[in-house]
Structures are given as C-alpha cells and as structure tokens.
Image (cartoon, rainbow, N blue to C red; front, side):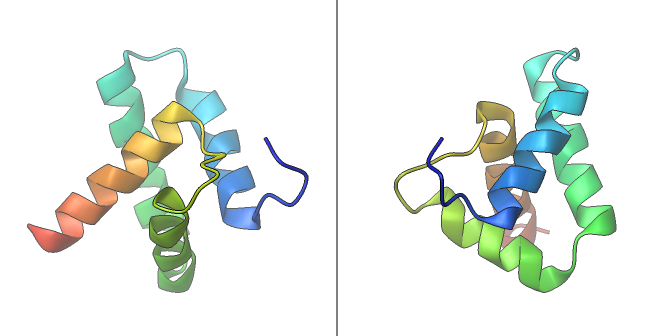
Length: 76
C-alpha cells in the first residue's frame, strides 16, 4: 500500500479486515452494507472513483464491496 493512501481506502480496508473471517462473497456484501449504512454519499462516490484508479490499494474484499455498491446503484 502506498504512503499516500486516501482516507476512504484506509477505512474500507479496515472494515474489510473486520469481515475477513466470513466467506468472501458474504464478507464483501457485509463491507458494502456497512459502507451504505455509515458513509456519507460523497465518501462512497470517492471510493467508487478510487476503485478504478491505479494503484489500487484496496483490500480485495473492499474492492469487491465497491463493485457491489456500484452495481447496486446502477441496477437498484
């Protein structure tokens, strides 16, 4: 992870660690749910942008959660 990681990436990765004991699909859904419940829409927008921007410092679960959130937004 680079030294200049954004707060959204750091927080998403911290959340992913909390759910890492679950099966990957369930963990990603739980991370996405947590982000939906507790993050400001601007933070979610920034996470969505960062998920597509190299270098991707996101934990794989956090990255999958960002993709789930994107798909939920596009296909409610």
